[in-house]
Image 1 (spheres, helix red, strand yellow):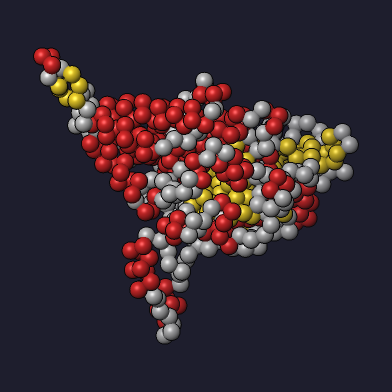
Image 2: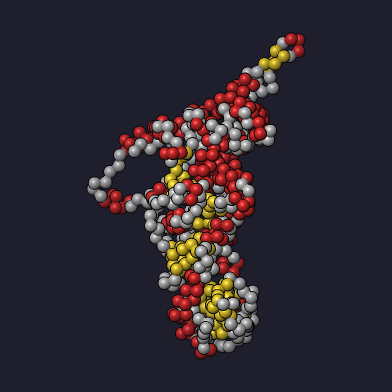
Length: 580
């Protein structure tokens, strides 16, 4: 039996005009008009028996009736005939009474549109409750991921399809304090509970260190204190050696593009790296790799050997005419490159990139790193399906290079696996505007953008999903954002950010953008392939809330006992690591 059985007398009004997915309903009963609200659901009669069309109220126009008029065009009717009371409805799907053995099936399709004079009914009370139950149960095939409850009906749990959310990428946006990190924590906790979960979180400020349980594995990029204590992957500390960087990334780090000798420096550096990798493979007896490797192959090499080669060329003298020596082609042209390389290598903050230990130079070391980052929960002994990497001690100027290095590593491993052996992985890009910017201001940013654009475009084929998280969507690379077919938008107050989100909305749901500045804390507008009913959802509280770092100014100022250890801050500043 249909859950949407209405009598004609229950109708709010009748369809006046139809335009693709937009319907205009004329309502003559003013009390019924007053009971309607924007963004509430309505039901319209379908031209096919056993079907009901579901729509969302987008706009309500109510004026005193002075005279009757025939109205054909919607927009002009509101201007020329203001006496007509109109409701604009956007159609979002169809409820079918019976599909095979299943009753009351909701689909995000419009096989028909309402006929002129078709009845329109309000979806409320018991009917709304039963309809939301249909929505909540529709994904009961094991793919359900619970976000919270629908704002329309707090008794109905709101689910998204876990497959489509990560296959087709997602973007989570919201102003500071809107609940963005809360929502991310909610997603991560449910992923971590799965038997063979696999996700990597780029935690830029250490917000997700509070997420606990067997499903989580916390890692951090090594800081100066970790280098001094010789901590390794076994201690949850990551060393990301320079030889994992792509050639383009190495050039962006060491070559000053404004230098007139930059092309020569890049060319010589390329030759020196290839030779250093060749020497390493030859010495290790890896003939099979030696025959096919490229400059971007993840093969260790000695940075000292590269430096020595550059220094030799910088002072090289070659035979000239008349038996006299003359300066070589690169004499004096590599000084700035050598200086930058030595400066970076000696920077204590970059100890993770230039580790003093020889462990990272072992040929088999990469196997351990890949296992730590990409093995699923079962492969890791039922622990650590969600790997949270703390990048808080990585200097901001090379943050894009290091984050994109890890992302490129994950993508490359997936790409080189046989198609049947790929275990999918989701990359959660917190504070994405910092390393996937819309406008690249450095070579590091350009390199990072190229990596993430490729993942956004091709990741689905190789089992790599992206979740882009940012408080400033207008500052995130537009190509990457446009590839995200699922949107979870919290409150946004900035006009530029709102415009970005509006561009992501389907044309028929463009009016949803008006909700962005008025959403409550912890409330989200969810639209996309992964959700059956695009609407507002109140996100459920995660078991462990993220460490947002928000300080209650007034309360701390009013606390007579509140204090801070400024001396410790100075000590940490000098040591370039947090002293605990």
